[in-house]
Image (cartoon, rainbow, N blue to C red):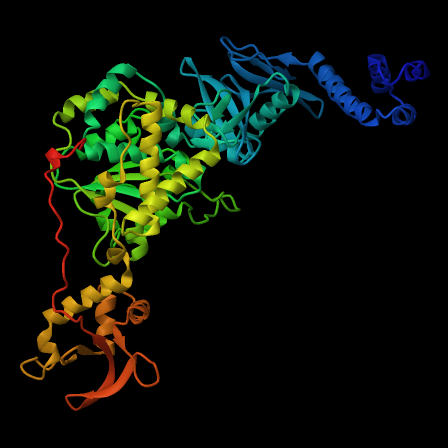
Length: 617
């Protein structure tokens, strides 16, 4: 019979189904192998060997599955999401039972006292890890829990699902694992398989979660609330008409530009950055933050707007989850006691990557990364006078010195009832644009900033993103508005001098010397003699200088190298910074700092323009 089927194989027609059935149903293993090899020789001659092997594997799997299912019970739960084959188990509203035989004695055990079955398999598109969605009936309703396979298939780990409501104990854990495994093995085609994601943002180059169909959320339960709130709600026109009026305020415009800029960071290859609004309470900073987050979804506190009262690990997990959606947090000063200053926090968040962490069950967690903007509010600046240049580079700080929103309560209610429309429209618009176009637009704005404004490259990068976000928002949402110009935002950029550690520390040391002039004379100095002031130079004891720089968060080595670059130091005959010399008859190691030629540097006169007279701000 097999020869007749092999003879029917040609280059054009399908390989007969009867051939595969004959091979699979042959019980003699040797005879089966002979059939397969004979067929393979014929298929190889016709160039169809790979096709035959693929079909044989598929037929073998299907036959085995069909044979299992033919002898299997099916789940029979009232209102069950799926009806699945369950082998020898009896699964009904009373729970799951199975019969066992041991030493010629038969007995029945209860696997689980309530209905439970796997209803989805989820494969994460980032990690390729699989999770199982378990549905279970308890407290008169069907509930769901998504768990890692390492939890579902392990009798020790599955006990952790007791916290989620499943009645699993150390006694029945092994039986529940066997039951779930049996169902999954018998229903590979019946249980739907979905792609899943545990974060928001860009995937597959040009798709953006959550605006993608047929992708399930499989992440941390703590972030499911945020995930569900990235959606449209209410009336788009009511949101648009109200926000349109608010956008006449420069603070609102900059904050919304930062919010729109967040998904552009990954597209143009830029770095995360921080926009910080600070000032006296009562000016509407919190409501302004909510306006910016209403672009993407529900801006209510605890949804897309958070408080800063969180640990570093919590910040990293939240940022990694948001990924390309802006991280918005209110009242920065809440964590002041947790940090000596905010410098470490700024650098940590703007690096966009978390440190590696060990898993409780062994191994290392996947490294968390994020590529988004951060929008903070508070009552004080993030950076201080002694903050490092890298910190000042990564923050655009704006002092709020007047009321931003007149009726904050009205605005808060409007954006909490109507939200999420602009973000979806903005993403849909970006998806129509060529990535090279976006990069060129970003580079052109970045280049213009550096050509026209005295600022650093990283400050220019951040502001270029804000201006590009505002420009694209004007093109696809606020179509009758003129995009922000460089003149509108230039005053919010930090100058090179204020960022440069050499110039900042030099200004600091001049003030320090001026405040302690008695320490540089042998008259009435209480015995603390630091050096000597001459006509155009200050000679300072190296140890004293090093200690005071450190107290003010300046590194002596970095500072002296920077001062040398600007010509602020006088070197000795060997070209070194340190001079072994006598001051008031005491020999020690000294640094010679040159004084500026003029006691008071010329300060450019800047014309003050009334903010109310400026158009449009």
